[in-house]
Length: 372
Image (tube, rainbow, N blue to C red; front, top):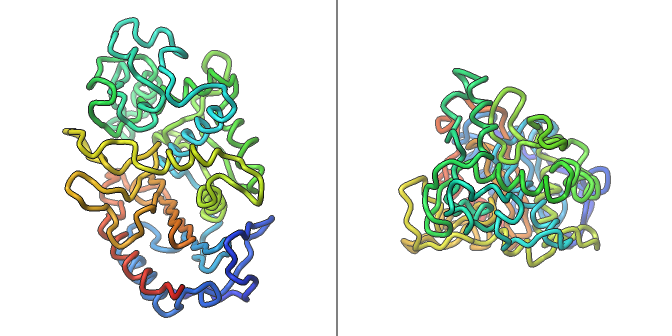
């Protein structure tokens, strides 16, 4: 049985409430959410979600914490949710004028096309949307994650050394960590600071993320190189945080990059990053996110077959997704942020995932709980 935590009503449901050191709490009912139907939705997710169920889950509506599980202060790696932190740094540097999202990657890594001329056409937006066609010199190190950690690390560190192209930039899609590493390396070189330093100073500290760390591979060219993709490994996994702090990150995106009157991210960037950037008509033989992928955010856009990934959720819903069971959902139409985390999955990550069908059924039940 999932128990709903009933908080004192500390707000009136206004849409511009932001947490200080602690979240302000409110009852679900005070924020227009039927408590019994919310209970039903949570019980469904608890029964059908792998890992720790809803223990590390929080729900925020109108900036107020209306529900939290018993372990929301548990800090651990969030794996591929980290990718959105990397694209957030891209947005910060683009806003500064340090670079443009549409710049050619070779402008920052001149050796990128030395062996493979096709790479001269890759733009930063291609890297951020998995449409670059880039592959690292040694391909995918995932198979060695558990069996041979040293060989796995060797593979990961080779991701920024170009290997043969998979396809011409912009012509297909592959969800793949090497392009994320190239983007992270470019951002690190462009700012001469680590991704962690930039994100902490510009985002984490201003929005009050007290639990934030970012694994790294040591120094590259004299600068600490953080794991930009959340690639697993010994002492890896990218960003480490907890559900309560990640809800702050989601709330920043819910408000188009504005935090309590301070514009941290350019709203135009937020819109672009959280809307589909991969044409639905693109063909791919790989894991297919065409029609529903932004700058590392998973979107609820319309795919080539005319369907949405989460039909029961509003069209503008988007999410960060890591290791199959770490999620940061932002639902603008419902004025809602939902974070659901679970610690490291088993060796077969797919076996520990929460399927999109399960999320859709949860959203169907959650929709019934919304009274306003």
